Length: 145
Image (cartoon, rainbow, N blue to C red; front, top):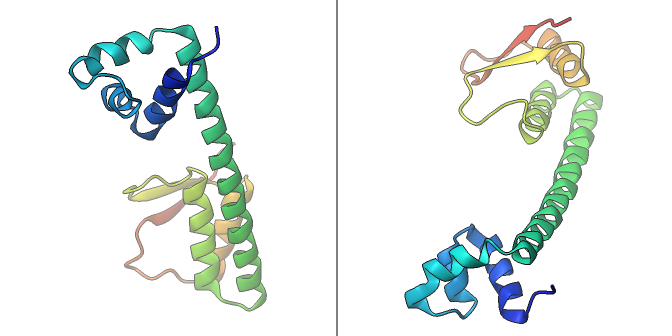
């Protein structure tokens, strides 16, 4: 069964913050029964399907952005290597690692598999450049088989 305009708006509003009550209010449902309305709407297969479709579109858009960031970081790293700017090489490498989930926010140490591309890049930087003592996180290279 296709969604009517109000339910479609609810789905779009739900994508903003994941708050069903607020999404129902913003979509034009009654404020006093918004909690119950949101709870009921989120049980409908067509509403769940539309939210899943919107989430997939959002994920795809985010992935394109991540790829663009990766491309820029790789270009920056190559430029920095060419012009012998080891600090920029390290920053681009660490940026690449963060964007791709190799380093989590607030992580104190980084474990790197030196058999993969990222590990080789970071090992090369560390071998060519003495790292300042106050750099956090401190890369720790660990070989994995």
